[in-house]
Image (cartoon, rainbow, N blue to C red; front, side, top):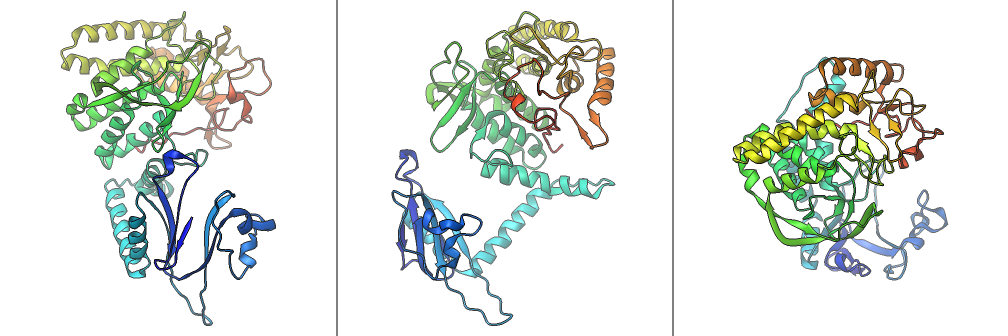
Length: 469
């Protein structure tokens, strides 16, 4: 960490991680920096983060944090008369070059530049978020739809790559694709950009990184069964909304990496682009082909999880199947078949049509439990989402996607949604449960979902994805 008194700036770089050494972070202010410290222990002292010892000191110790617990902090001195107010700027940034850090800090040490930039960015957000206006009888709904949700998606999920429960700074393959679905109404180019980015995180074999960090090219290869299909889903959505079929011809590289070994559910590693490229159309085909892995009930295998990440041991041994994934795959096949036909790929279109037909029959026979659709078949032969179960008797997404996919038989769709309303709509608490009863002490061992308290997150809580549509 370096303090440059002439430019009133403190800069630092990470010497412990090679991939971060090129990035400099810096702090500055419109006020003169009198002292600083890079030692977190000195700054917090015995008071901890709730009452840092540094707040009781006149000056900091002017030491950097090399070899210590690191922080970046500085002290400025401000005098105020009674009832006087004063505006100051506090600047935090990151750049590749030390001179860029100094130039930007110098710019925003001037309050007039800060105010001008604030006005500019407010106008940008106002223009983007104002492109869609929805009016309903509920003012709270209007507030959510007219800017707030879209702002959170852009600022938090895409730009900051963070959230209430996930602050790791990573891109999630499925998550950030889902985040951009609703943004098509504001800026379809964002949807296209996300599709292109995610296609570059698909392995040659067709599977994808569950999540990754752009900064160090490290991510996790898993056996999640649904991630890869969200790429296809978003491509279909983009084409339907924009009519832009040229996206299918854009070429991007596949990732290279060792295939997961038997009994290996995941591997975190640095994965680099291969020399093999494929069009977005070809990326979609590889994702679909990788997903055409059916079990003894004629349903796609769930692997180490599907849309419900917590089902980590439902099918990790290679036998478990997902009913929900069957509906999702059937919907994707139905909408991708016309794309194949427009590409004059009639053989592939016929293949997918036949597979969809067999999948529909399996879902409405083996996937049906009498009053609703089952959720999954486990490696050990147990069934999730069966009325015979003590826990997870019914799961909402198997019912809702029988309707969304239009694959459920007509009578079964109505019966299953009636069951969903009767068993999962909790009017007293104002929620729609993901499943019920939650996992707690029963014999079923579906994975880490059982570690959540009953009624929390995926384990029987309301787990909502907002698509802003």
